[in-house]
Length: 129
Image 1 (tube, rainbow, N blue to C red):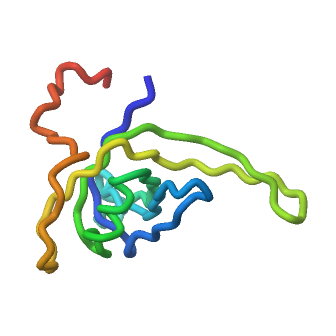
Image 2: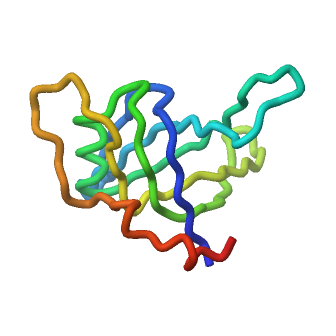
């Protein structure tokens, strides 16, 4: 099973682009706190790249900004590519199926309700971990 749920804050505004077929894709990095502190008592975070497709990509680009808290439901994807120099690079990212805005922004636009996951509907007893 490849299913991930993350809650964190955006490290910068989402970037949106469109494929040659016109499909929107948005990218951003999510800072997710670790559930423990280091030896100095400081809380650490993981910085996880997120990819969002379709209407959710456009909504993310329009309404999310650096520092906003969101919940992501999706899957982990590992891919490779080759640089111009011939070096092979590995990329690990989360492909978001659902994006849930967890706090209201300063925008006067109404934030969308569709394509979001309601985390209260998840039964924790059903999770495999």
